[in-house]
Each structure stands twice: as C-alpha cells, then as structure tokens.
Length: 100
Image (tube, rainbow, N blue to C red):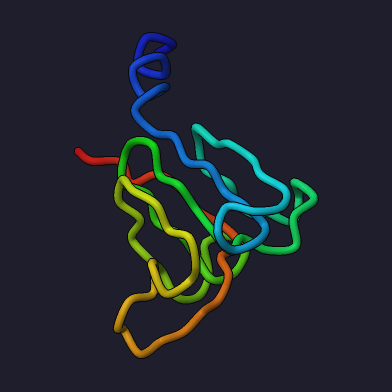
C-alpha cells in the first residue's frame, strides 16, 4: 500500500561520494541502488549513513563482498572493511536493511 511506502521513506538515508574524505561527486539515496555506475559514478570511496542500517556491496547488482553500514561516517574504505582481512577500496551497489 502507499501508506507502507510512506512509512519506509525517511527511515533510510545514505550519502555517497566518489572520492575519499567526502570529496568529489556526491549523491543522496533513500532507497536501494543496484549500480552506482548508472548514476555516472565510477565508484564509491566515502559514505555517510544518515539513518537506517544499509548493506554495501563490492560489485553491481548486490554481488561480491558485503559490508554492513550503520549510522555514521565512513571517510575511507578502512572504515567499512575494518579488520576483516578482506580489502575492497570501493562499493558499487547498496541497499537498506529491512528489519521484520
């Protein structure tokens, strides 16, 4: 229903930048993005999660390594990849985590 759609709007907000430290091209999203390249970006190198948990993916169409993105700032790739031992210096797709 349309009221359900209105409920989810505003629960999720993420801003992404093409370069580290919130530099370069930026775009704001309230819903999933299957490929950042469709928006004219080459990659995502820094992220600010305004609200809601998100999951970022290494490749388009939600493929590859996944990274949980909770509210906060991610100025460079170490901030989201942490000590996992798996390094990916960019994300190419992401979507909000819908909780039941």
